[in-house]
Length: 414
Ligand SMILES: NC(=O)c1ccc[n+]([C@@H]2O[C@H](COP(=O)([O-])OP(=O)(O)OC[C@H]3O[C@@H](n4cnc5c(N)ncnc54)[C@H](OP(=O)(O)O)[C@@H]3O)[C@@H](O)[C@H]2O)c1
Image (cartoon, rainbow, N blue to C red; front, side, top):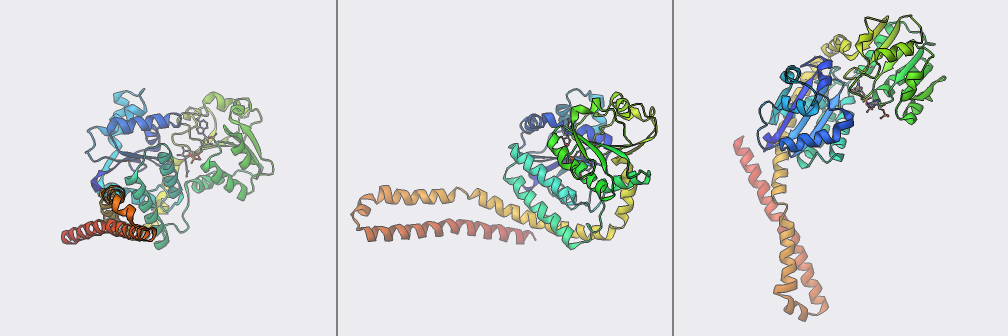
């Protein structure tokens, strides 16, 4: 059933980012946890997406999802959380079904539902989430078909509307906030993490002339690749953080860790005795910098949650483009319904080619084997060719007929 598609999600519209962070599957246990979820709930397919402003569980299940699904999922992801800790997170999660789930997915991919509307980064994130879920053996034909169609829908939205024109990104907004704090080009910048987000951030640093950048990362090569662009760029292993004693002016933190990376003790040691006001940019969800540092040290702290106001202003410029995009989505949902039905017909008839081939083989090898053996080679070849031709034509007949019936039923439904 088309209704087999479901999405359980928590987004920046539903909750502060801090709460979203608690619905994220810790990366070090992701394979096991996602497998557990899929088998525990009997889903046939699962795609898991986590970005800086949402967590999404897209799954395919012909049965209706169970009651209290959100709470049950959270208790598997975080076995250490109590019922009373889980309840307020679960209450904010939304469960969408069938066409509503697909509409939501199209809106997410088209960046209509992003914190910064029009930011195209989401397409890459969706593709990567699909590839990762596929590599983990979690997806199948229903999600493969839907994802392909979703990416095409997003591309149509970006090309046919102005939603992505001059769009800002979360990273661009954070960088602009940091610039407002009046940081000098000679500032000593420490960066923790060398993933996609910090790579984007470092492009801004480079463009605006910052050159003293030290990057810490678990995988040193990735830090090295980013650091080499800066005149005084340096790459250090993640473990070197606790021994670093050269001080800093700005600290940029963004990793996939689901717990604090910069604890108050580490922050104090990174200060190396300096007591001037520092800039700390933490773009991780959940936060990687322990906020207990805020009342203790002089800090201008920038996090994604702060960027909502600027993001809302960005949205008001895009309202008209948003409604154009919404009409594309309505049309694409009904196009997907048709494609999906056609695919189901193909799937239900997928055994036919093998069966017809088996009939052919039996005719030649058993039923008419003796008569066939008496023919001269030219006649045998002719018979084989004729049988091959019949095989191809016979395979196409039931598929064509079934598609015609499906089309007729749909047009009668209106
Ligand atoms: N992509 C965006 O547009 C965007 C925007 C704003 C915020 N964010 C948020 O930024 C965070 C990172 O996203 P991303 O897209 O940059 O991820 P990414 O490309 O996968 O990079 C993850 C980075 O975090 C490091 N890392 C992962 N787990 C770690 C751990 N337990 N301890 C220390 N380092 C760890 C990785 O180190 P290795 O290289 O050694 O694996 C890598 O440098 C997420 O919280 C995301 O929500 C993303």
